Length: 203
Ligand SMILES: [Fe+2]
Image 1 (cartoon, rainbow, N blue to C red):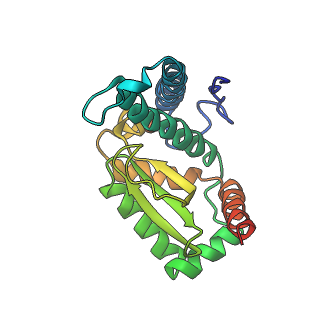
Image 2: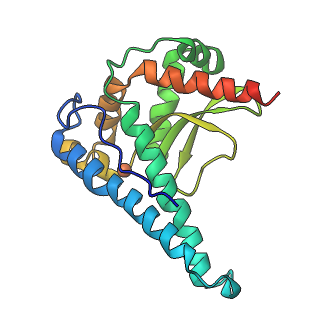
């Protein structure tokens, strides 16, 4: 199986507003790269695991399969997270209209997104659920918990302390404000339209 590549940041380490170069350097180069490398290591280990000993209480197979989802979601969510930043924070496009339609107003959505970010232990994700055709703010306490099957992540925000501790200490609220100022809405809109098209393609 081909190895998963560590994707380069689409902007410079110091390009973001209020999220510093040191934070991004650690977050992207160490933590995100760590998920990708471990996912590759797990996939390699899985090729040689003794499948006849698979057991739900403890087995090498279970350990690898369980941590595979942690590493894979760690890779995927971080790539989306870095990918939706680097913008001017000005909402636009069809996703902006859909946010207003599903949450009543942009302000209501933003209030809910940030409150969700305050109560999540790991992630808050704006996701499009093709089963009801609506946008939702979902939270996850770990990468492999809280995901909703079939829902397509449109705008994820990492709420682990490593995303903001250097810049804001324990002030997560200030970090969430900074995150909002960095959103690339054309990228969020591209992801939203891809989700809708995916849902339509299934009909
Ligand atoms: Fe992270």
